[in-house]
Image (cartoon, rainbow, N blue to C red; front, top):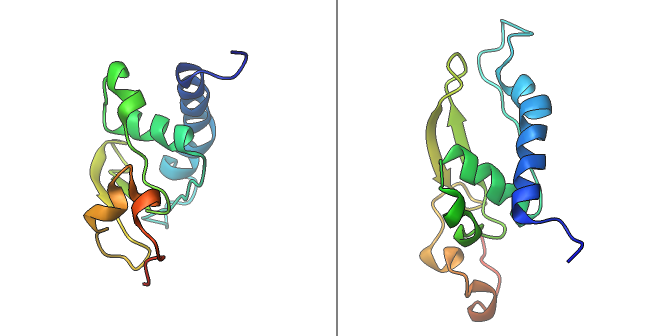
Length: 116
């Protein structure tokens, strides 16, 4: 196929993270600001690529990494070391998602939207 492979997507996404997102997240342009929040909204393979890098998922397992729809994934980093502090899946209401929200079959099994 002439489309972009997952490996190509990973390279492109990680380059974008290093060049655009990381400086915004970690650089000390304004030393009075202690915390920064960066929101990344993208297609599943883009999010999958970032998740794989942050969570150190082996390349062979990346295609199997499930990216839940409409479930925010929060990553916290130590700003000075740029190391990952924590990861958390959250529902739109701020709580942990129900197991049904994380299953691959969710779109087929949920008949009504979840109310928050």
